[in-house]
Length: 64
Image 1 (cartoon, rainbow, N blue to C red):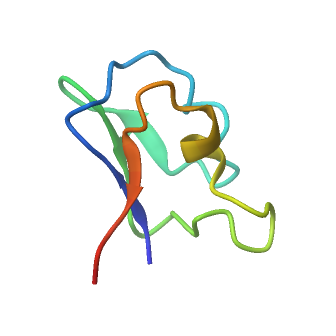
Image 2 (cartoon, rainbow, N blue to C red; image 1 turned 180 degrees about the vertical axis):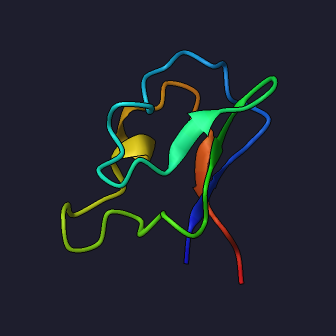
C-alpha cells in the first residue's frame, strides 16, 4: 500500500530527498506520491521517511 500527501502539504521540500524510491515529485500546488513506486519504506526503514520529516504531517497512509 502507498502513502499519499494531503492538502496540508506546505511544499517545503523536506520529503523530496528522503524517499529512497524516488516516489515523491512536485505537483501543483502540493507534492504527490507515485503509488506504483511507494513501498512505505518497508525493507529500508522502520517508518516511512517522508512522514518522519514532514513538518505538517501531510504524508499519510491510505485507509483501505
